[in-house]
Image (cartoon, rainbow, N blue to C red; front, side, top):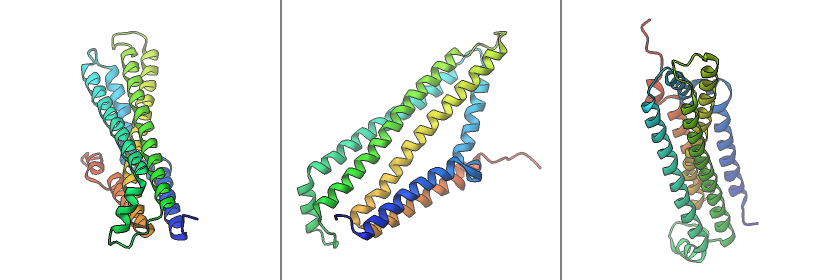
Amino acid sequence: MALSLPDIVALGFFLAAWVSYNMAVRVGFLKREGLNHSMDQYRTRWMEEMSRRDVRMVDANIMASLQNGAAFFTSTSLIAIGGAATMLRATDDMLKIVAEASMGLVADRVLWELKVVGLLIIFGYAFFKFAWAYRLFNFTAILIGATPARADPDDAMRDAMVRRASRMNIAAGSHFTKGQRALFFALAYFGWFLGPYAFMVTTAAVICVMAARQFSSDARRALEDDSPA
């Protein structure tokens, strides 16, 4: 088999770390302490404020900014997919470089191709997440446009549209976040090209950085309650 026991353990650690982190920020008490959950609450607050405005140019500008961000990362993911495909196509050249490097790396063709295919899968996953987030931000903009004006007497319809726009906006942000998370884990995945032990180290490092940003960063502290006691 191309995969040695250390490779299997390192790959399993990588996948378990990714799944565990996703679960930690989506369910349980850690979700409520995370930056993403706090921002979801502000997305809902934004839609509520939007419904009280007669002129919604501010909301349109914010939505354009969010769509541009999603479009940028969608294009970036496509470029990354092309780069990984080039690595796969140039396997012989890459193996020659690895064999000549004085780093003690083993130049195994099957293992190299497995690693590159995994990288392609990660970048492909990121592309689909960013592309879908772009689409959902588009849907949110449509729901904002369909929300009745403040002077409209149909309060029930306006409240219903606020809830729908909020849920759509939160869903778009969730998919965008998952796409960015995939790019972060792609950085960890590059450690596998240096060996299984380096792979585990880079995975642990990426998890620590993301957890710090999610639960104890300056951005998280900026959202803490600062009302006087």
